Image (cartoon, rainbow, N blue to C red; front, side, top):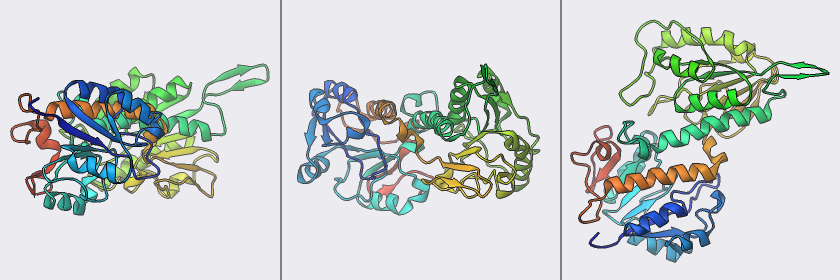
Length: 380
């Protein structure tokens, strides 16, 4: 690099957030590559990374307040996990990288454009082979699927595995996973490791082989019409008629399940409603439903993003918002690796500065604003 490229890692302001954008090991790697890394004091505490670990890695630690504000204002790239409240404090031309939920945060996108910030949305990174190391959405969703099953197991009033004892035999718990993407596959694998009997369903018939390879049974439902997946690997949005067929067939599996995990999301749109009150009323008392789409409208009627709900029937609805926060150390390590890979892909090898999106499939997919305007076609 001709000159140091300055990075600033924010301490998260959301009290629920436990992750950090960069861990000390990656700060050390980036420092060795010529980056100048500043970390806001306390940024890694909830993930198990104290300030001293960052200082040992070659990063500087800026106290919250004027010192952190100055480090942010001088940074070429500002890194954080959650979306910022505003463009305040970020200099024009700087890169800002975080999860954004951009389709629901259009005013923030507009503000960043006006402020001249180069805004990067982690959710918009293309799901391609080349971008795998940068795919923060997948890395975090995988851990969320794992955490969803552990949360259900902790709340379920029966054991997951089959046990044969002198006092009698305990039958294995039955788990039904709806949606076999990254989160669903990890949920299946985790439930099987815990000894449960697992059924799974997805609108994409192609995933049946993956389900069976994990030892689960694939539930076949004839939805009629077109199904499958988008170019980005997400399940296609179903028609109202197809959703009605899916709900009817799933209800029979839900009735005999001890745990149901729903993972169905349509990026940029409200989550499809898959389980209504009519189904919940037929489920066993004490059974647990984890709605991993609870923050975007919910797959399950009555679920809430952050609060547990117990129905009149005694069915327990657990929130599925940001379950990866329950394992913040590993979530931060994986996320930090995604940030590091993205920064290395974006920088110009000769100048050390961050490149424009022009002609680059990955950058053009995730950079929303540049040069004082919105440059992403889905938001222009």
